[in-house]
Length: 213
Image (spheres, rainbow, N blue to C red):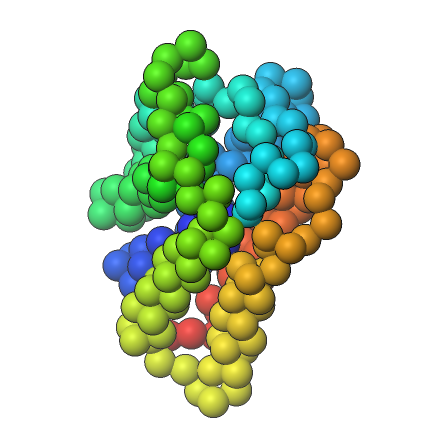
């Protein structure tokens, strides 16, 4: 899952309203941020294989650290402990849950490439990426539910409502466009594009958060 992960950010914002939406955007994508960094560092690997799946061409061939079940639990706990140093326990729990939600939402989408422990351990994934329309529907449902919960929990002026609607429209447009975007030339380019996208969307989410109450 890609943009759909942000649905969890909006739900978490409803439950811990004092936490920046930008921070929650980074939390739900932390495992992918780490994966992108590890790919650029040569620690983990992905290949671009046209036709690998209907939804994308990403063969995530080696990612035992952030995207294993045990790794996801470890990074979630670490994120929660960091949050606990600066915020209340409730906030720390939600940050940890937001990080771990990435793995949970990835399971139905991925081909069986999510290891339990390490690369040699059994791997899971239900393979919705093999069915573009179903994968796209799952992304939109996850994002839409989060947006709906977030919208009902906040109040805005008409002008700020326009900003929120524009941002929501951007996320929906990115969701629909994702399976049709040009295929990156290799895993390095994909990692670079993904990391840039995560940062830009987190900054936009943090900016938008300033106008809501």
